Image 1 (cartoon, one colour):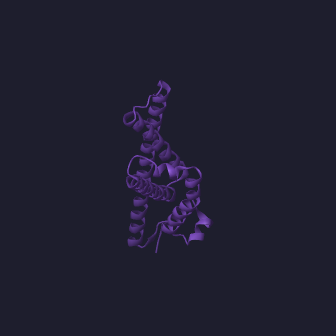
Image 2 (cartoon, rainbow, N blue to C red):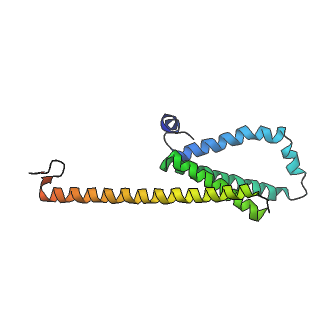
Image 3 (cartoon, one colour):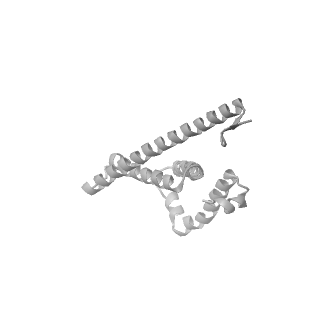
Length: 161
């Protein structure tokens, strides 16, 4: 993901960045589709090639939507928060595989999933309380500034005009 000075290459426009990434991925990956024989495999399937193409389009759309969500997540949070979100996403994928595909997990796997969910929820709770406290202190500062301005005083020096 481009950030800082590199993001200026695309005029700080996230849509242009997403289009650039999507087009570049399509161009770079197309030769691999033919070289690996996957294209012939798609054509030789017993199913309708158009339904397979439709699923590929759906997959591409979902991938594009995921790219946008990752971009906004990185833009609006810290890398630390981002790592928690990514870890929780991976854990939810593991839990989903239990139900959708009847994937077997070991006891250690269940303990790991439980610890990850508990740790992520704990981090979210602490972060939420921290943000709530920050908002309260900002509101208090704004109110104090307004009172000082209305009374004609300087809140920093404690002197009145």
